[in-house]
Length: 311
Ligand code: FAD
Image (cartoon, rainbow, N blue to C red):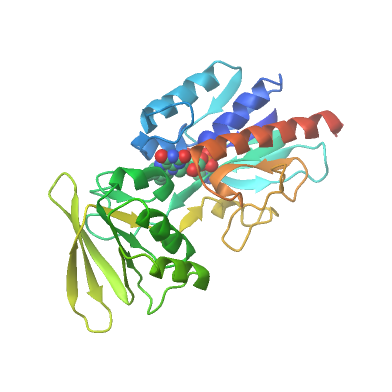
């Protein structure tokens, strides 16, 4: 058994495990892979103090940093169930899809999130070649160019406003007959001269020349007409889904979006169980934020362990 078990091996989990091990507590990290979404990322330009790096390189550095410490890395495993302790000081148990179980007096949940994808032809093929999901990350790569944002909820409209300041032209595409974002955001978006908005528009394909995106095809859902928009980038903004399905019946409080509810010390509603990163209600999902949150969760777990008598 561990004193702390970290579940999930992205930036949040990596940071949590290193912080815990540095406190001299017996620490394990159970993950399907080390790196998380970072492994799927090409260029990273907003990891402060590192001007440019690439996802696989940063992931390898996280893994190397973990291996500097006495941390039990259990991988590849996927957690399937959390059974919280009956009372503070007792062991929590995590069950895995492979039938194994691990227990620990404190837990850091950091199973991250995944961007909801459109599932249209060209999307997977041109990911990182014009298809992007994160405007904070990739917006500046499209400086002066033409992009589309798919999704007219708050995140899509915020992304379109953000991008309208950076890129040459933005087309916002919404499947529904109206934008679903807050009115103040919609008004702001409409104030830009370089933005077009299409509603009742179903994206059917992202086209490219074999190496990069060159356009987007959408169908007008009222007339049935197909339209092609020539452009260089497509930002898909139809939702970020937290990887918390496995926590549904655990007693951990989740928001209506399925995010683990945490307080400003990264504590969940259950004593001894902390959470960090994209799987939580923390605003803004970024590598540097996930690492900060993972560190915070570990320090809170440390605080819990030194104040709680083992049962
Ligand atoms: P994740 O990175 O999602 O890691 C969680 C890990 O836990 C994953 O490996 C996941 O598979 C695993 N997991 C899930 N469920 C289970 C389970 N049941 N059992 C075990 N393991 C499980 N951010 C930036 O700051 N800059 C960028 O340039 C940038 N670019 C991005 C580009 C792309 C294409 C994507 C997808 C994201 C990008 N982000 C970027 C966002 C950033 O990657 C995330 O905010 C960050 O990785 C979140 O870290 P995390 O540790 O919370 O979760």
